[in-house]
Length: 194
Image (cartoon, rainbow, N blue to C red):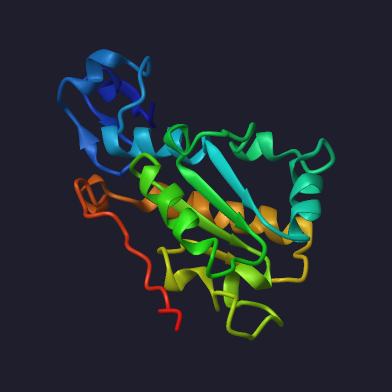
């Protein structure tokens, strides 16, 4: 549990933070790890994503290769996809989102459990891609908040895994007070059709 010094080893101990402990920690004698509850919960959360794939276009093929055995999403904590948004906390938006699909995406996002994260997969989800026209949403961040952007047409599996590692770093630093508990559902800003 720390470095001990000679005769003082029974009463004084240097703990990992660098301070000397005379308190009840000495009774544990290295048999327990002391941490904050929030740090322990965040450690568990960053290795247990329950993802919901919202796949709409050609990046779906690359998503399947990332989820396969060669790249093994399971070792990063994102094992099996959930097919109900109420059981998911990571929304992976893969591909182009049209204005007709936008209300469905927002509804899926609103049904997810808190805390929830969004992963924009592919340049079409990030910025609309080369579909710069009236029918395509120019980036899903105009509809829902996005935590990680992974550009590419389609993005390489290594980029997706790097994005997942970035999301794990973000989750590890989150505080419970940052969660929008009881927040109002997101409403899409849709264009009115004439």
